[in-house]
Image (tube, rainbow, N blue to C red; front, side, top):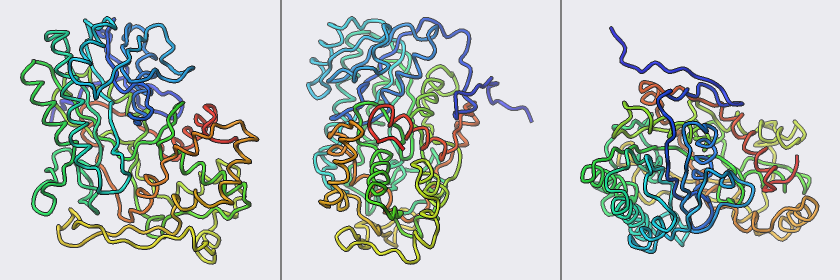
Length: 444
């Protein structure tokens, strides 16, 4: 049998291995990166990581337009002279976006990396879905209208980042592994739940067909990363929990249940995903494809948690199961309770999954003695109060409360020629180290 998989030379950058050597024909390209500041109201950390990766290939990308409402924080990749920041209000409508790009000199962009995203105003699990459907769909559509008005067919490909909610993980346990060809979860009991990823996919495909560009959809799992100015990230919430509990003298208990501790949770490195997206826009075989963007391993929290404690120089005895699960007493004011999901799980469309936490980080973070310990750390380490105020406690609680396995296939990316991978434990350690450099977390 003759393989049709493209031949790819690879290299490593730190713990990120199997990264593709870009084709020699890729030279002097121009990119647009939206959501490039990675701060509220576009809290994704993807934009800054995409900038970092593109700038690491100076002969490939010679001009980059970074579009966001506010400039990326000082000291980030956006300070590079190849980057032009354009103040853009993506909720202002197509004409506003067009005017901003025109004033910023955008007229010859080859590729677009669309990382703009707006979270709903209410952090509840099921509230705000209509708002996200309307606003995130409108931002993408208005941007594509403005881009076509400005460039008249110049753009070759647009990359859109969505996520694992495509597979219905927000409803409960799903079939493992999640594969790109899986059907949407928007019929029967899920009708009317308004998954804004589906709306964005439809808009992208429609405009690609209408205006002659190609599309790529990157589907990560839970994205882990750390960049200046971005606090809405599970890694920051978990890192703060460990650091403050250490300040309090422990114990530093895993917030989830025993079942969660031993379940598989496929995760996505923000940096590795950026490498995948860069490679995908330059690879002909990736045209008009949805591709899972995951790390390539199958970690459990039983592996991750002890390594995280070690990264913070916590006494190794804290990681023992006797301390973690057998005899530890959890203060009543932090304790969670099991909650049945409102929808049946996609796995069988009958049984409902449950969310369960031993420690609710959102409650823990409001405890006066916890706040006092944080303030000691903040003052001693020179940390910004916004790190604590903006930490995504509820998001971290939601991830840690899901007791079922989350397995997302990576075979399609491999078959197309992307062999990038990172050990998730090492990725978390790298993210913690980057967060410390950015003064988002205290020193170990």
